[in-house]
Length: 123
Image 1 (cartoon, helix red, strand yellow):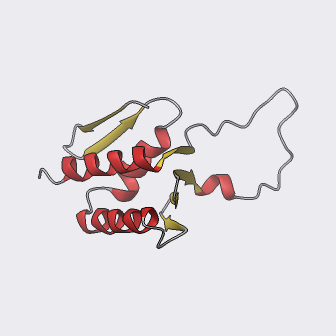
Image 2 (tube, one colour):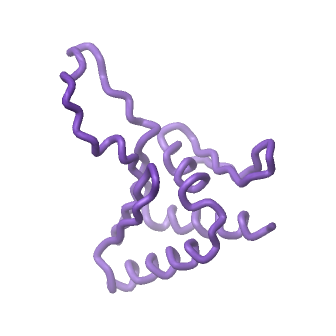
């Protein structure tokens, strides 16, 4: 998984991830943002997971949720959990959700969060 932390044209922090992991970038950019206290709390929760003081953790966001277990981090859009009353797509059509969910191992997630914490603390 490749990623890059940059600034947009307005100077705001931005995380861009490779195909299949775009949801992680969206979650960092728009849900976690540069909120250093929330990032620090998240690092404490991750330590609790690693020390077997927690089984899992869920952070509810405006559009995406973060789900942590002792092994994995998953970012998932709320839209994927909505119940559609409409008919399912035809047999030859597939619901596209690759930009709405992403996962990685907890060790990789720690590396991402530490990098984001450092990057967003620059201002």
